[in-house]
Length: 292
Image (cartoon, rainbow, N blue to C red; front, side, top):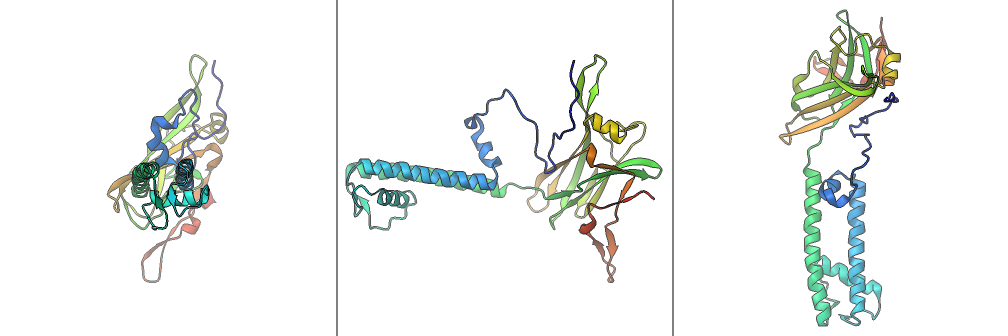
């Protein structure tokens, strides 16, 4: 017999997954490239700096093991050995310090190779992270349910935060909830929600996504209490072609039962200035008003 799920997200508001994977190998070496690309920028730069310091420290200790093998370096000075390692790895070559023994020359050749490969890999990772297209899509903090043409309708807003355009934008909305099957087991099921319009040729301004709650809707007969009891979550996925990069971008969002307001309309965003141009006021993007 399964147990009902508590209200919780599978998808964070910023689109990241909150699913915990148990029983899987957590070794970084199994997918190191993806791990380095998925790291936050702070973690990535910190890791690069840490590796840079660690490698130079190891080579500095190796130079010290060779005795007095660096000209103009103070005997036994770790600072001088570390400085010489940095100059060698970065191919700076100030000329004040240079190797004087076969051991030091061999170590310099090996370090130059390590530096060449390391900088090439770091440069490639930096380029891959910078060149990866990302979408800056704004979703309303709440969703609303109110009649539209006499039909209760689930609504939420989304907008492109960049000044470019997302072409052929498609949006997919699903309802995830726990259900009791005929065998008495609770299962997490996902139902597609049919939208009044699930695509737009040019996604440049705002877009109010609507799902009519009719007899064919999985939300038919739902109440705030039933959605909370079922740990319901509205999962949203938006994809489109970024006209700047000419590559596909995507964004995700989710709404739990507590973020769905009933008998509420979104405040109108559009107006016209004195010159007759259309204007959109994002200051009211998340605002709703009660049903009249």
